[in-house]
Image (cartoon, rainbow, N blue to C red):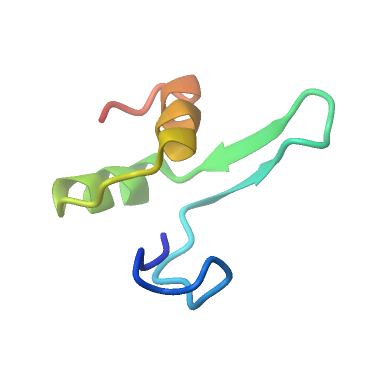
Length: 60
């Protein structure tokens, strides 16, 4: 997770997983517990992150 006010490659608040779209098939690894905790705190994921969470079956 990154602070939306920070630059695109700015400081990271927490790492909840990894994504590599260049692998075949794409590599997606997400810590569901951490993701759920952040969502409960009110974090608003980007459109891309919402899609990745949905692919991994993590409820928003």
